[in-house]
Image (cartoon, rainbow, N blue to C red; front, side, top):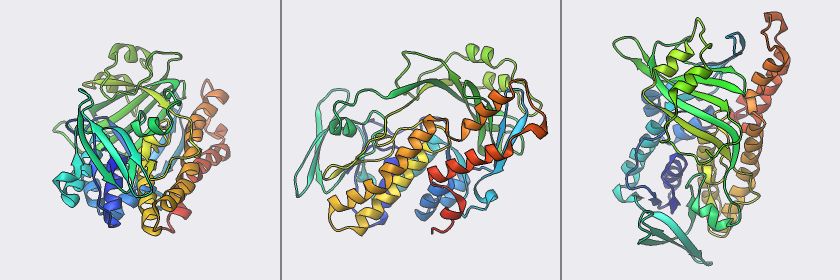
Length: 408
């Protein structure tokens, strides 16, 4: 039983079904819809999706990212690196709309597991377990009325940063930890920038802009769909709950980024061209020492919500799904399998959460801003320092190229 029909929960369903398990997904909402904006899937998680037979559908619905390029707020480039197959990985990196990826997974679950594999309008309310099984109780979240009771071997909590499963395991934990940063997210139809497959980071962690294309096709005017994220250090705020649907004030953003006009990108024009802009508080939770208790465990944002730095949120959830299915395949006893799952994924994801709090690879943006607030000459770029930061993050997040390429 999987509580949660997001990217992590749906990937887990496919991985577990591929390993021979009977799986059912329970989702709180009445109708699963393609929410959110763009995300990135790194080579280590694309490996998992490829092994599930989804590579061709990803290629048809996403942009294969060619490179990652960093600029300061004056528009000066100080770092560039190839990504995915362009960097010698066996698997690509994709930029894709979050909702597109979720619906792709949703449709594949229905195709492989059948129409009754996903039960919507089923919000987990409680569970009980013994040595033989675990029983989950589901309600209609709006009315509180009982909907269904299901008994199985394992319950996986893949129900997001405000996970009900996690709150039952850790009732005293409280609210997510707010970073004092707010992400303002949008998509804009516009002329491609750089090579049309590039992901860019501009500014510093006080005021930052991230942008990348999420569709390869262009319209009659030659415009491409660009996903962008403005990261603003807002300080203390009551805006602490993550909500994909909360709209933001476009005029305020235009004022903040009014001078960010470069020959390769017009940032104010990109903001102005968005149909809607959504505000999203950057929040996480402190890493746990344990996810699994008897026959219940956690996965994805329910286990390790993290700042969306380094393109690792969805990627780590997909890695959880893969490892969980491997553990349940390799161990006869559920508790032994879940202990093995914890032993690998709890410390691995805990490191990523803490690295992202420490700005992850985006440390290089603050380093350049602090050393060269008025700009720099090309010969002043500290290439060795920047490379050390970027290489370290790849190892922490599990996508060091040489290590990853040894896998199948």
